[in-house]
Length: 366
Ligand code: 13P
Ligand code: SF4
Image (cartoon, rainbow, N blue to C red; front, side, top):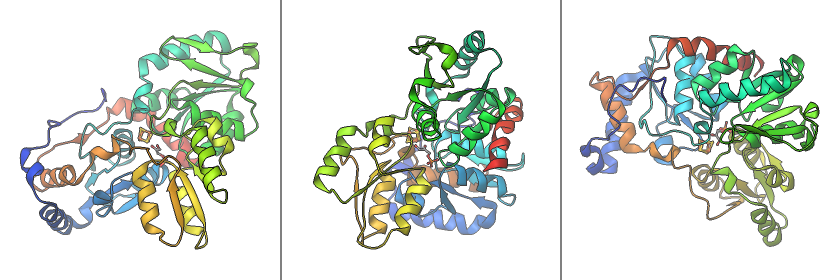
């Protein structure tokens, strides 16, 4: 978060902690009504129901980046998601539009696994090994500074919705791919495109070295050693247990799950893919879902005609996504109403200039 201006304290004022739910909902309705289309609230699928009820657009990371880029009307964009999503929205909107994150502590632990200093160091070391044969691709779950690094080195962003398309494109540009920060999305995507596991190395940012057994000349993909702590919680034994108990069930997982889990599941794709697949399935079908719990619970509630469970019933929600709640949403909206510049996400203009290159390359192909 170092390149972002934090224009207010992170602390939720006490009055919001004690306000009743119906009062908060009533105030949010009032402010939304008053601001009309000057206000836009995008909400990621992983947000809680109490927040999603107020979202003007609900979607996956790619959809939310696209709606942010398309919206030229809203002066205030209150992003209900995590920090990297709000940064992306800020970079894709005009200078007159202001992006707010209702709780500045809503980060993404995966995005935090790659900082720009480690990334520059890795790039330097990898260039000694591979010369000018690599192109960087960064999952949008990364800081604006990493997106800028990617942009200035000829690379692009990817989301879980377009990762295959973007990896294919990357190989039209260079012989090797440097994929960060999620090793699992990178590995799953490259494997699906026919790249064998023994042609993938892992860059360990803590040790500052390459993890690979074999001749480095054979390496096609270098994966940053990052992961999502939520999706890494789905295991091979979860899949075996579901298969044993409900042999007819379709197991559908997010590609942030590890290779072993994706390999023995039936389907994998972005949050939008999961939602669309279950929406399109006939009544009576059954699914075990390997993704974040707020979304799984909403899908279960939306489909009483289907048998749906979480692939791991003990999974907890994404704790940082969960930080956006009714009190924080109302707080953000009341600051806008009172013309107080609080919880604003503003990416440094020099970072934006280069990061936009990597976002635009993705959006042009998406
Ligand atoms: P989607 O792009 O599939 O919405 O995923 C974002 C994310 O953070 C998943 O953990
Ligand atoms: Fe980040 Fe994982 Fe939460 Fe997605 S689910 S926002 S990748 S920590």
